[in-house]
Length: 434
Image (cartoon, rainbow, N blue to C red; front, top):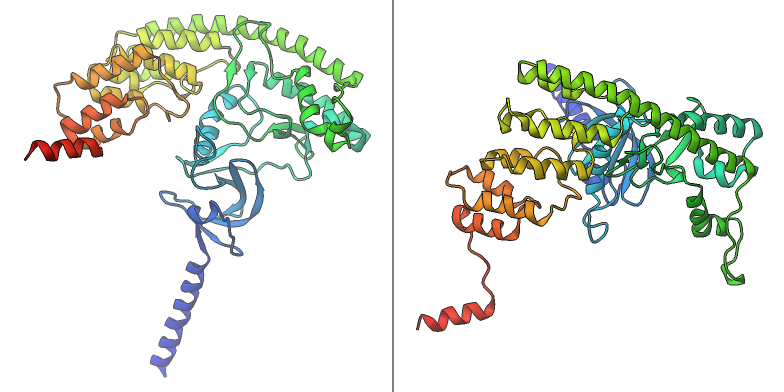
């Protein structure tokens, strides 16, 4: 009897375990089909978290977002590629997971209201804060469909825009910014940017453009809103958008507010840079140096980034590999800034190990180097006398920042990979051996 009970107990355990495994779901299963099993457990490699899939929150052009729950019952959002393979000629669906991650840093430092990132795996997924945006109001609706919004909510949301203008003052461009990606949270009483890609641009001069352009509304009107409101293009040319007076006032006030804020930002960052340069000169170790350059003003311009990049690339007290090991991620968040770092530091690099460190500062998505820098890197690779592990050569071969010539050279000289032979070459080789 005792043995029978034991057998029954073991069978029950196996059945429960089998059922739990059957409900497990991987990231690969969510990409593409996105088929969900009720209360599926999410399997994540290299993650200590335990998550349960709840439902699909939404799907855009490149990304799907699921509501998940951690082991403590906290709701979170999981971002995965919408599909497998290429989204367009230049990018894969998975690239937009990386673009979201890389674009997050500067938005966060500038104080923009955005979701927090908790976990990230390159090309695979992001686990982010689930914002309280149920029944949220899109900025597009505020601008174009005010007649459908409760009057008190309209006034409340419009007033809250002032804070969002302050938060985004430093930007001349937020990549992939459009009115449907800014939403007003009814519970948090603020506007939140929920999506973006890479990379963003910051102002240098007070009167540089800003992200609030009333002229851009006309294009949105002609591309979408006119038709949603029952317009018919066959009746003739689409009429221009005629903004309400409160919209005209908002955009005019936003321009003045942004220019005043930028004036203050430039003044504050000049003082900040003076103190920072003084601290850098006094720093006695790489750890101190790193701590100093990690700090940024609450808001800053492109001038600040240019200054810090210049300081770092001209620093002589530390070796190039030491400098490469402490470069803060915010300095490479913009593609042009990363290219500046590559251009400046590639001339100081003396080993392929340092070159790989430079390439691995961040993902190389969207980076196109100038010819002179490409040739400098190519020469460094093809004239190196040092022997490195195969793993290093393979990383260089797979890097988009290495020229085709340098890749072929590495394969031939160190990886013993012979170039592919076309039919004509094969025939010539056959006949010459006779």
